Image (cartoon, rainbow, N blue to C red):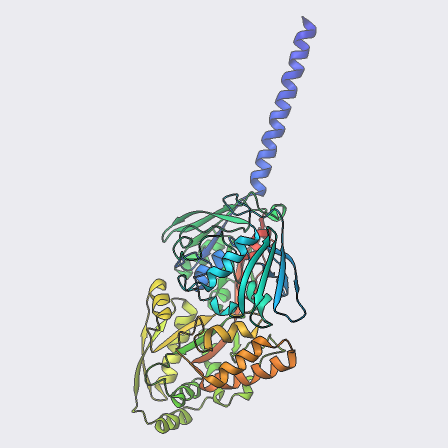
Length: 509
């Protein structure tokens, strides 16, 4: 009997030890897999990766929720994404991708080559009207050879193809004619799956348990809190309510520098700020008026006043693309000269002051830029009324070319074609300016179709000289991009293209 009692006590001790160990493991696991609270300025206009254009939307979807066939590392090198390898035919018109095995969508269904083929066809679908369509202009067909082999047939060789594919998300098949399915219920393959959207409150993502690279994902989830007031975001990062402000302006970065437990990270942004012109109606249908607007601008003054000096004047390509960009000194209209602007307006035969309106992207740095631009244009013969719509209205007006001028930002890339073809070629998928120039079209077609780098460089140099002074966009600045990061957030990297893909490797300690 004594032996039985002793054995029972030992069993109870063993059970207690097991329960204690299990409890400790659960607590430790909970501590290592936490939800990351992020504060962002605005609620997204939608979550369909083939439709959304605003950074408020795109930063949430591509990387955390969705992935492309190819990807970029933090140094902007092209690396494998959902495709682990690819080969091109000798003539460059057939590219075959071998997909990663074992990849699943967030609903548990396998991601196969037919999903990838369907995704590319969806981007080209007129029913969807994707602004990404121009990136696939060379695509003739996309075919699933088998579950893990995708074959792309091209109308002609496409030098920018691999770079373009980094920004095209793979979604489930069968949505080629459906432009509504993913706006409120995204379904991707990325490290986090969509969980909840509280309008004007937050979007919550949870870890995708079936993620193909699950060992890298340390967070239990990510919560994007919509906090329009910059001061509230600053207080939140300062007191630890938020662990990350992913993209902040220079003014906010200056105010947060030196705060305990807050680090500021920075990089030169690939996106540029711009003043866009609607060339389908007077007065901006006249290239002399567009050139006059450029001469009226003092880009250094704009950068100093609106961006606190954190940026560089924006030629059509950023200086970090050293193999492609022209120097701003090669663009005569970048010399601030209000008298020259007035003379050009006189040559154009337009009566001054020219009364126009400017629609402004609802972001503080863009509002600040617009106010300085308004003052500068006023000294050269333009009378500018500023309009400040909410984000959804801005996007709708932008897409419908419902503006005289707009102040905004355009996403950047490592590839010149991504800057120019979609925005400035006749019929380009984001050519909201209604701009058409046969000479430019020829240069952009050549830059896209030839694989010879010197020939491409020459084409893009000539394209930049056309766009720089008489194009439909007055390029303003490539700003410095800042992030504010709490000391307990590890593994987050700031990307020059604003990607939040590094959240899939981040952790909280």
